[in-house]
Image 1 (tube, rainbow, N blue to C red):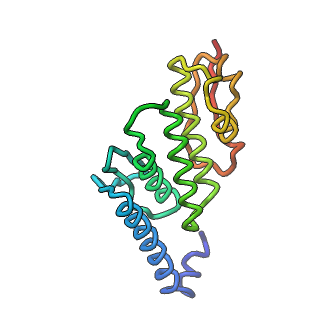
Image 2 (cartoon, rainbow, N blue to C red):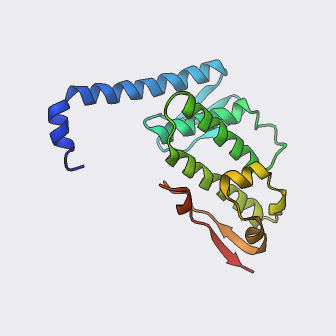
Image 3 (spheres, rainbow, N blue to C red):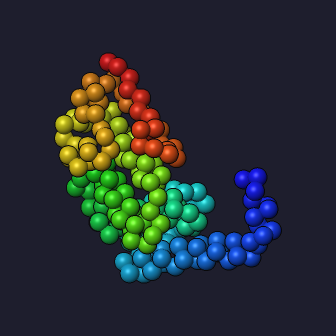
Length: 180
């Protein structure tokens, strides 16, 4: 960070043009996806949170891989028809995260940190289900593998909490198990 002003003096307008081009590209990608799936934006969020309804969404302005991933995640909920409540919430969240990761890869914005945050997010939804009595043995195998869920430990716990942070490695994801 200490070199940022020096680099900006040397590279100046190039850095500004590159950054603006990337932001414009992200915004255009999101607008194309919205148009393709006939989705309207109900509100542009000021945070990196989003929400999806049947054909409208609340999404953040895409300014980095994380907010772009959130946009794809919410679009995924609509494309995958998650307003039809047939699956546990954590399964819907897993599917929306897989959709987002696939889109980030397609457009060249994939970042492992997004995937780690996505894993923590899905684990937090699984924890909610477990805290409400859901048996972890009913979690689909592909979700267990992707998240690294420890089914037996989670089934034995009284309560589970998974904070959602910007994780740098999968092994850094925190899971708090409260014993019975």
